[in-house]
Length: 164
Ligand code: APR
Image 1 (cartoon, rainbow, N blue to C red):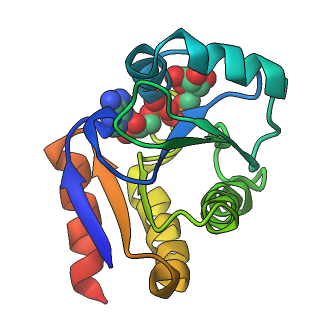
Image 2 (image 1 turned 60 degrees about the vertical axis):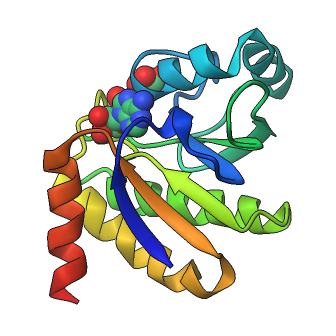
Image 3 (image 1 turned 45 degrees about the horizontal axis):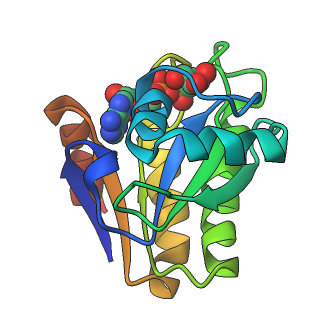
């Protein structure tokens, strides 16, 4: 089942939360910063052992002090106008994250709006890509949650869910 909620992803009691990371995997601002703050310093230690993540791919670590058991770190594309393969890379973030979750027997997963903050991806188009992929995986999970930080973001997803 796909569910859209508004709130702080670090509070969700799910198998895995997805982090909108960067290729260095050393933390940052936005949701990346929030997840590292909530997980504690062991998360950075685990990320350092991984040694980075290419754009469009995903890596998994334990959740440490988070409510979630796992954190799946994925690196979204920086929006450059849409002609640099951004849509394929963003879609890959969602498919690679969901495949990684399946590989670890995870049945509930929550996503932030990958690339829609600092990386500037237009929210409407990003939400369309996210929901398209989530629908393809929906029957293999108990729950796929879209965790929107703001009510405006939530409205974008709800509008798209209503149109199908
Ligand atoms: N819970 C849920 N969503 C959040 C939270 C939170 N605690 N904090 C921020 N968000 C939302 C933002 O509102 C945005 O919609 O997550 C979405 C992604 O925004 P960013 O965190 O800026 O991520 P992104 O656009 O993918 O940029 C990634 O930012 O923080 C750095 O290290 C990160 O370099 C990387 C870049």
